[in-house]
Image 1 (cartoon, helix red, strand yellow):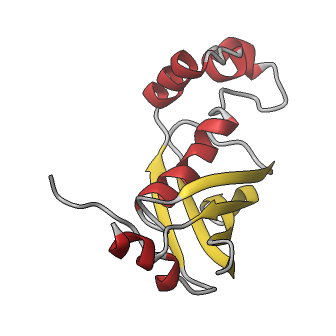
Image 2: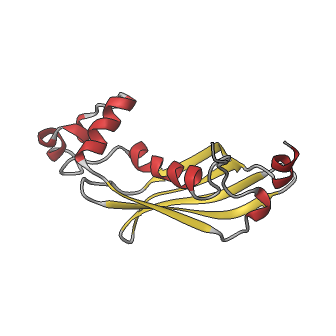
Image 3: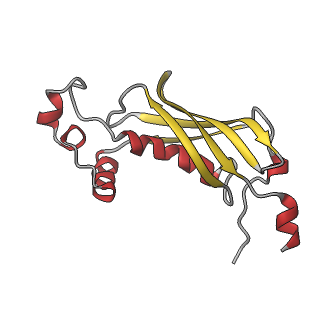
Length: 147
């Protein structure tokens, strides 16, 4: 099996960033409802959702937030990092057919603890739909070489 690893702690620098983009589909919302158990009708029932402040169906906030995890686990830092914490502020809804761009940017590195802080922002066009910050543990290059 091929070795898979992301960036090591020593490879990271403040300001480094990566993005994942995904267009949200009806199927994404239905599948997420089934997986998560969140069957709130604002996500699934157009008639119900039309009567809400959103005036129509919206994606689950946590579905949108999961695109941040896609960046962390596959791009920056990538395979091998461990998600320790995340704070999120949901700023605007995401609708079916909209493309979400999740961007992660390194804001601080704590070499002593092998911890990295990243800003986590999701946008639809120029509109910020989620703003937050995450803490990660990132493998060191030396730890990999010692194995």
